Image 1 (spheres, helix red, strand yellow):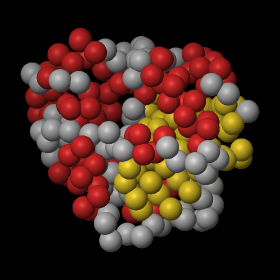
Image 2 (image 1 turned 90 degrees about the vertical axis):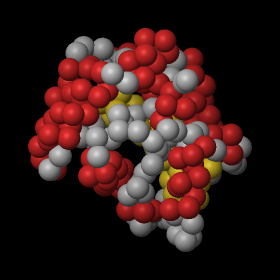
Image 3 (image 1 turned 120 degrees about the vertical axis):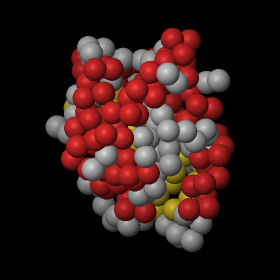
Length: 230
């Protein structure tokens, strides 16, 4: 098993219940929507997951492309949004084959931690080619190395308390300790970056970055960076 196959399988480890899943994706969609540069923007959400509220983003732009590597998740996205003419779903290879300079904003949210440093570098090179000269690259949910698991657990509990699934979140934290997640974490690892390291990485990839005041999603101990091609 790798991270893609882990997230392609429906289980109660990723989301503690349906309420958690729906509020999680609605929060992300509203945060991404706030970053859309204009109603005429072409937006790509790369590694979007189930993205159940992605139509909120599509409503704020000209076209939204959802890019997802996990085949079952991708099939569900195509079924869910088939009737929306402002949305399309692609594989990573299909996204990489799009014309250079054709996208106004690319979002990579909660994906970088599952990539090696070299994989992230290669992905950012692809994004730089796809973006228009005045485009925006949004890199969200960057995990700092200090107490990452502790802050993730506390953030989930607070999110659950605020949205009516606190006790389900407690149970979810117990389940994750017994799941394949930690086995994968040991075998494949997670990538962590502090602010200075990620700023340097983005500059090396040819971007002019700044850290956003608010991280996309519920965990404000993680970081979002908004960059333009340098």
